[in-house]
Image 1 (cartoon, protein in one colour):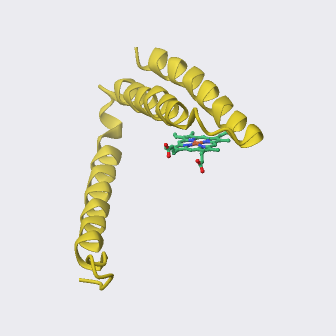
Image 2 (cartoon, helix red, strand yellow):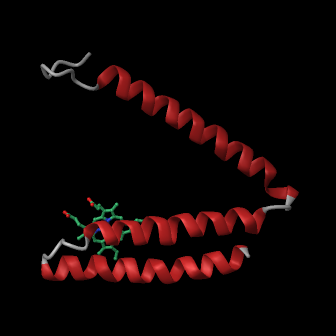
Image 3 (spheres, rainbow, N blue to C red):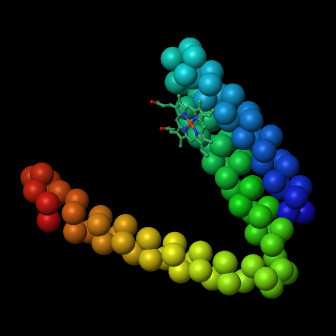
Length: 95
Ligand code: HEM
């Protein structure tokens, strides 16, 4: 199942990238939301889901998954801190 999701995802990526190239070449950006969603849902979501199913049950990847989740959580916390402390208020002053 994991491999199948990755294979479906890569087809979506090719279609999404084709739309990106089309937009760049024609300067017609009307398919921008479709492009974004084909890439993000079709490729990113299916690809990640495929990888998760692919590694599921393989105990050797546990430490990597653990480290990755801690790093992502710390990154999200730093991002949240930056947003909450550095974004300007309505008057344009950092608050
Ligand atoms: C060959 C590869 C790609 C090309 C040539 C391309 C090209 C473009 C272009 C021309 C735009 C519109 C920019 C604008 O309106 O100023 C765009 C927007 C966007 N692209 Fe791509 N793209 C590519 C791959 C990807 C991939 C792989 C993803 C995601 C995994 C992605 C996600 C997005 C997103 C989220 C937007 C913004 C959509 C919006 O503002 O509504 N693109 N891309």
